[in-house]
Amino acid sequence: MHKLAVLTGGGDCPGLNAVIRAIVKSSYQEGIEVIGIRDGFRGAVEEDYKLLKLSNVSGILPRGGTLLGTTNRDNPFAYPTLVEGQLQIVDRSEEVISQLQGIGVEALLAIGGDGSLSIALEFAKQGLPVIGIPKTIDNDLMATDVTFGFQTAVSTAQEALDRLHTTAESHHRVMILEVMGRYAGWIALYAGVAGGADVILIPEIPYQLSKVAAAMKKRANLGKKFSIIVIAEGATPLGGEMVVERNLLGRIDPIKLGGIGAKLGEDLEILTAMETRVTVLGHLQRGGSPNASDRVLATRYGVAAVEAALEGDFGTMVALQGQKIVRVPLAEAVNKLKKVNQDEPVLSAARKLGIMMGD
Image 1 (cartoon, helix red, strand yellow):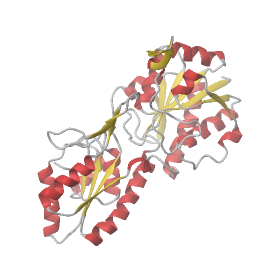
Image 2 (cartoon, rainbow, N blue to C red; image 1 turned 90 degrees about the vertical axis):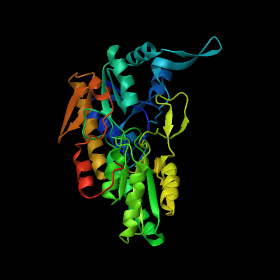
Image 3 (cartoon, rainbow, N blue to C red; image 1 turned 135 degrees about the vertical axis):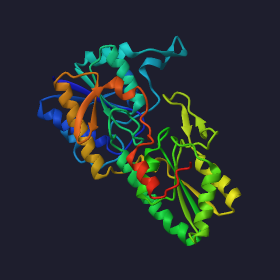
Image 4 (cartoon, helix red, strand yellow; image 1 turned 45 degrees about the horizontal axis):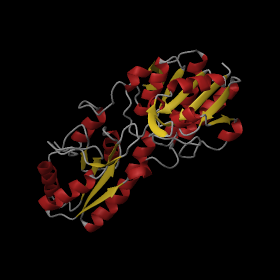
């Protein structure tokens, strides 16, 4: 093994630079050259490469974002391309493989979530040596216990809840925090438990508005004049639908969720006559320096991916299972989303604490 390529695809998250650093440093120890592909799969199509040296990764461990750039819009298997003056959607995957082989790349390390790794899987099916590295704050990838970026996002949401508690108690208000997570409730669940929320609403458990309102009134009758609610962006009322902020053309997943917190706030004010305020945490969850847990996990993933490349174990994704980093088939990682099950231990703990889950 003489040359690897690495790219970061999908949404940014804390720990991307940490894993890039680990790939470059561990490859250097083996005498392997690392080519960075800028802006995800767009750079793979457009041949936008950068040789990554030790000097490029010096000091980037605590930095958020990704020094390579990223995008969740470009898919080489359906790439907008000008053909005879007209914009057409073209499969340029064979071109990508030829270009990478032409510069001597022997394996591609793809860092991404379910969308980016699904593209990586398609390349693996075409014979490109690929290894996946699981990245998403949503923690919704199968076959791995945790994705890096998740713990930092939870910490950010928990800190926001700590701050909302003080103003909620002072003004006797219902405070609603809307967090990310797409179609899975991991961030809302973990942050809600860590931040002392009274109600946690997640996509996996459609909430009954009347029961949420009753829980608020019960707290008020007990002399607790404020309440804290955490709601995942993909949560839905029983019999209702997700609130979609808008559709973004060109993205792998065109649906941009957002607004369920405001809807819940309006509904609760009508039913309870309690003053309600909504905070949408948004991209704050994806930015900033990764915490120690994510730095260590990202570093372990980077080292493990290089080891897999050296051993020729392609078509796999490195994953955390228990305390060990293992390799799983890429197909196993992206065949469906990992959602919160009813037997999830943290969910069970939340219920035993008396946290209202909407049902």
